[in-house]
Image (tube, rainbow, N blue to C red; front, side, top):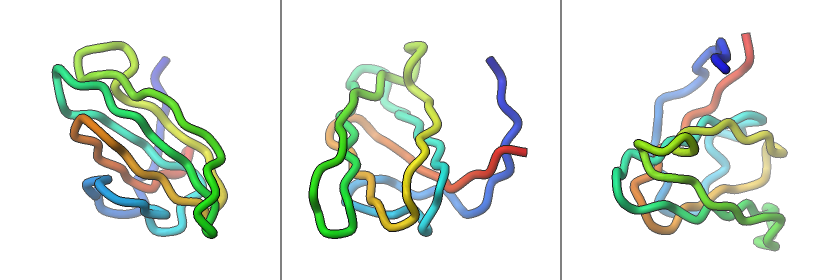
Length: 89
């Protein structure tokens, strides 16, 4: 399924906890071809809300869109994950 989105900010490397410009919707992409990444979503106070696996670049699960509260953060371990704030258009 192809979505049309409007990019709201510049893409960043997701290496530490980041609210991605206080985004409501974030596009995540793992540019690593061999290593999946674990994504952790946390409250602004640091409590874990959820974790999930982002697949490799060449898998069907290497690029996803995440909805979150503006104050919540995302962080990645493993892989090479980039994030950008988007809006559905």
